Amino acid sequence: MTDRRSEPISNSLHNTYDNIRFVRGPAERLVVNAKLIPGQRVLDVACGTGWATMVAAQAVADNGLVIGIDIADKLLDVAKEKATSAGLSNVEYRVGDAEALEFDDASFDALICASSIFFLRDIPKALHEWHRVLKVGGTVAFTSFGPRLLQPVIKPFGERLSRYDGQAPPVPSFLESTDTPDKCRELLKRAGFEEIEITTEQLGFYLPDTTAYWQEITLTFVRPRLARLSPAELEKFKEEHLAEVESLRTDQGIWLDIPTYFSIARKLS
Image 1 (tube, rainbow, N blue to C red):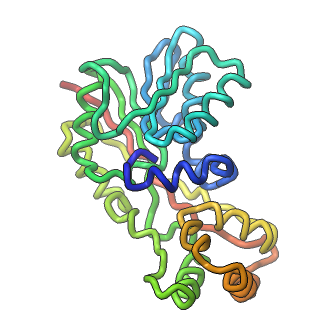
Image 2 (image 1 turned 60 degrees about the vertical axis):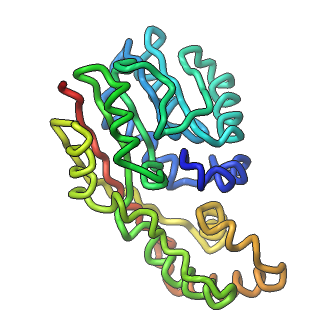
């Protein structure tokens, strides 16, 4: 998560970020869809704790290099520890801003950004920067989510939480800039990218019970709102909301919808 507005939230999640299941899946799938090859030099923008970075490092092999940047330094500390534990020698991590890259023109064969582009203040500016640092023939690849992210549970969650703290329901409105394939295509086109391909994958999953659900949902963007409730309010909110969630459980468990778009394009001039 590279946008300066989200920096405090990102750093506050550094010790639990890796437990957010719906973040890891799209990150790893992005690398597969980007079709990285051995020997490439790759930039992972808004790399977080490095899920996509590590898979990319395996794809480019020892003769390649992956540089991960993020504005949240505590997430990078976790990423560095993971790379060291995995014995990866072709990975570097740096603090960096997605909208003002400190790299020369035509520095990379590929650029990836997993589940973060929608957090940026100025997406067109960022995409022009990404175009600048790619070599001619280079690939850009990013993921974004559809408007049904975390449904059907996020709607009752948000409505009930707003009754506790008086704020608007925490629907993921930040998704709107990239929540359709057409929006993603237009952004890439305006930045000068060509051969644009956008695919949709449903990466949703079932959680076995309300305990697993609560662990997942409270690690997401709703966490700061919950942290402002008193202990008594939080406990009451949890009890009431989990009763709602239990009514949505099927024989397979509690479903979380994760509609994911993979936007892939190339710099041809």
